Image (cartoon, rainbow, N blue to C red; front, side, top):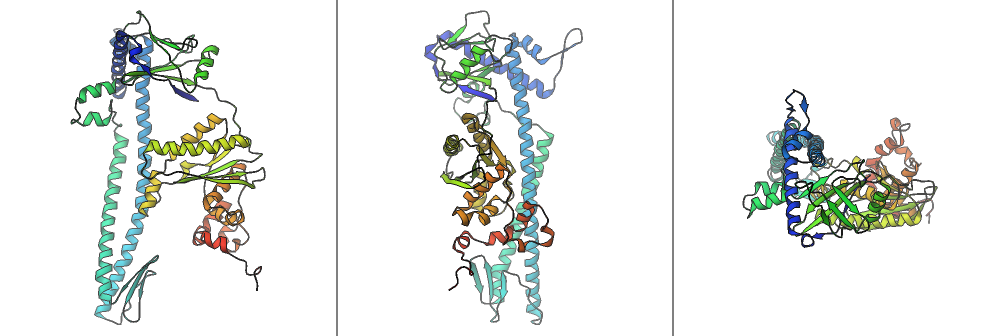
Length: 527
């Protein structure tokens, strides 16, 4: 597993002015070389020697910029990484557009069917006004009363219209216009997504060195100076295994805590020494790595304005993780505003349950990540005390796009759900505490927990789902309770357990939590 360790800031006043100037020159030359290599690789350009043999990009960069192999190879690898990153990002965008198109088509089909029903109702009203003997067509939401009034009901809201004429012009015609506009907007959005998907397949993503904001916005004062500073801000030199210190350009002294750097533009000159280079997190790893000579180390210099920052990138060996689920596990159910945690024993019985709350509303991405990290830190500290691994739901399998054209607040919560960030934090905390993490499919965990464990243990729906996730991580299967088996159709009696729970989803959704908690068996509670 690769780790990037950042040092404390080193003031530029701690170095001599000529040394700072030389580092800035190296940053400019290295980033110019990286941009050149990026252009050559994107254009698939080829070079040849005088004898006709092909010349590699690395040797061509070395020849053009007159530098050592270490800098040319690092620039070429950085450019290749940017191209590869753009390709992977384009794949994610294409997959995201596919899911959006699929969800819009599904919602569009429902909208068109609903519009057809309303048009049939309007047609029946027109025929009824011409000939009162012809019947009126209604629906589950639209009811015609004997006194001539019409009632329209959606959930808890009820509209009553005294006459058929008022119903037709005040509700039906308005609803038809709204649906027609919604269908047109959805078709336009689907068309735009198809164009975007095709464009991503045909053309590579653009890369703006220095950022899109500074590149396009011409109203920023001193834009060119700020853009040059942003474009030439960092330089990363890859390590070599054949070197004593893991890198031919950098040399870190573990005793004096100084980092020596050989300049790209003045290779044979005096080395530049960064004083007091200490790492608040991972100092012991770097020292043990250098003493034992475990392998290559990559170093990066970052210009932070009035200070420098040194970053060390090394590949850490996999350590022993606690992956034993025989004594129980810690199950977590991750939601928009809280994380539900449960602890089980070796038989899958509940021992402890707790909820860790946080608030995403109105927060930035960094604040959201910090809140989730604090909640997960408490969970992993508890798991470390109990010496049990963690079981979480596989967030990748959650269909985030299936709620298209539903409740706006719910849709916003789903779009703000930081699924990739949560998965990254889970893996990071697991490595930090040496605790294994297992990701299980969360299919029907809320339904199973609601019907099996909510009333028995007095849990919330999310805590019951976390208990199901923990039991699923231990290898237990949740069968259908005997009182629900009569509701299974003949086709589902011998089906797999997940399919049986799926067939009972509509029935379970009608049962509220309050009904489950206040239910009394009539046989046991006779007068």
